[in-house]
Amino acid sequence: MDFTLYWFMFPVSILVATCAMLSGIGGAALFTPIFILVFPLLGEEYVLASTMTAIAAALFTQTFGFLSGFVGYYRRKLIDYQLAGKLLRFSIPVAILGAFVANFVHDSVLLAGYAILVAILAYVMWRNPMQAAEAGAHLEGRDIIERTDSRGETYTYDMPKFGPGSFALTSVGAFMTGMVSVGIGEVTISQLTHKRVPIAVAAATSVLVVILTIVFATATLFAELIEAGGWTAIPWNLLIYDVPGVLIGGQIGPRLQGLVPQRRMRQAISVLFIGLAIAMMMVAMRKSGLH
Image 1: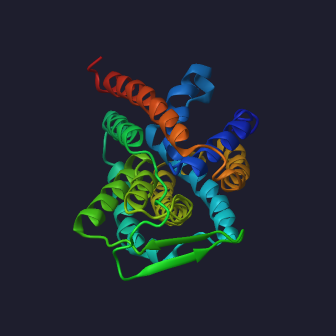
Image 2: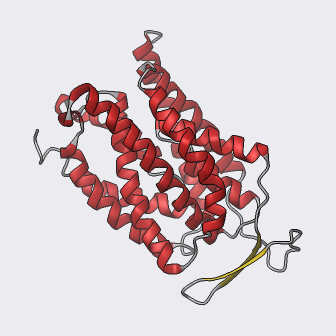
């Protein structure tokens, strides 16, 4: 195992993690196509063993990126732990199920699933960018939350009411995260901002939901890979560059929160997602023999 092979992923990981923290998406949504689409263009020696290996590596990397982001948001006192707990009781067990099922699904199905999901996310992000709650907006609920961050800024909002539809959507996002590395972060941030949770609080709370969900999904995927091929089945020579990179990027993102226009950031990523969806679908068709 050549431990100098993926040196270039250190700066790339910093950039990906920073963008993920700013936009509220999961970093794995970008790492997975890098591993699957870009690495083969660099040469055979860069290609990972399987699609499942790429997904597991992307989720493992995202875990550390969001851990770093969690520390940043924790210091800013922006995380709503009660709100996160309501979503985690559904997301964790379903993500484990998705990771388990991924082991029995053909690569072409995983890739097609990723392509379809990011295409949907691209549409949602373009049409419904995150919007801050209007100042002085009427708060209809009885459970009014006032949160003051470490900079002295106060956020006031209703504690969102989650119905069966919200929990079903969270479960779908968690299941797809376990299978194809994408879903829970995007679903969570969209739901919270739609329910008029302030952007900063929504992004911070989403980070906590994502990190705990993907920790369990990643552990399940790694266990499956190690059982099939031993410890060498894990691309450690890639992860030694990804992990420190996302730790740095995870600290940069929260510091830039509010400085980068959210609408432009999310629309730019939605355009990127469309391109990734098309490319991944073409790879899926080729693997399935349809292209």
